[in-house]
Image (cartoon, rainbow, N blue to C red; front, side):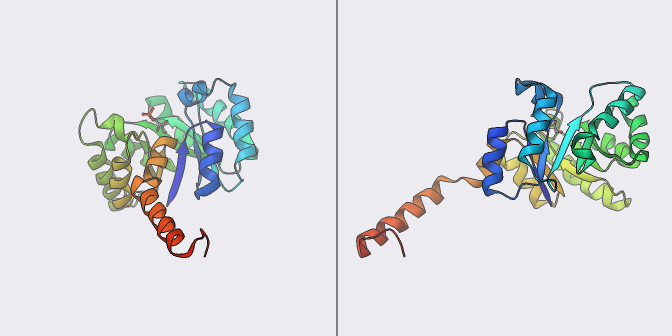
Length: 221
Ligand code: E4P
């Protein structure tokens, strides 16, 4: 199972990577612009921050077939392509470009997925990862249930694409997909923190320490 951070906030990425076994970072054009930095700087910083075993996902901006191919090659030069995955939206041109990009030996994540049917076609086109936008899908129905169903559909047809569920707004959405066995998830820092931090844990730890201190007059074993 892979768990990625959906962000270009290097401070948050550094913090989360310091205590969690994070598998990489996913970005999209909006995430990059939000950083207030030039894209090249963002990717330089990510390369410095992450080990080569941690994946970096970067999205093409061009919407036409030729442009997608050319930008995919450009992205694949980041860190000499080592664990770099190109994100391609599931438009007509995107779906046409996916097999061509794959033929060049470049890994692809099909993005902007709002329905299991779009995901199916991207899987059939040869994408390595599929990113259904769970929270956005919830505007049109039960996004979580549709992604759970997609797990079954892919297995049923032996399609090898890996679901990388994306666009999360709360911990419950992530929890339900983890329980359903989704093979990869990308979530923003605040949702990941929400999965880990619980006021009850802090309360319990304080209680243990206070009882220990009262009994033995020290805070160590
Ligand atoms: C991932 O591929 C997407 O870029 C991202 O998760 C979209 O998230 P949003 O709905 O919060 O923009």
